[in-house]
Image (spheres, one colour):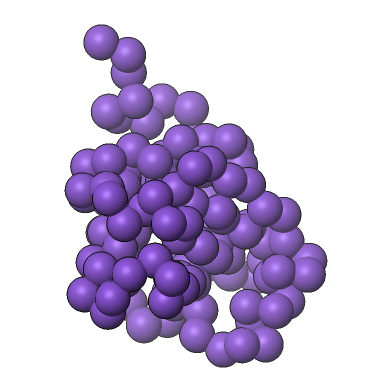
Length: 121
């Protein structure tokens, strides 16, 4: 994931919090905000210190970034996403993290309908 695809500045975070919409499940809260001129989606990550030590927080961020990288073809490009990890996200492995991210993004209706791996067996 490119550096251009990350949201870092506090002003950008605050704008998305104020103007965007939020959706949540037990592990993550996702804020989405549409930007029409944008060619590629951007993500911002927030993992608070209450969730765990630095190793745990960095692992969660790595898993979320990789999940977005694998889902890039199913995501809308004209959006900014802010992902806030909740306490239960610390217990997830990568596959569970990706599944949880797909779930919350489906709730937000930013994923295309037929995402591979979401079929019920």
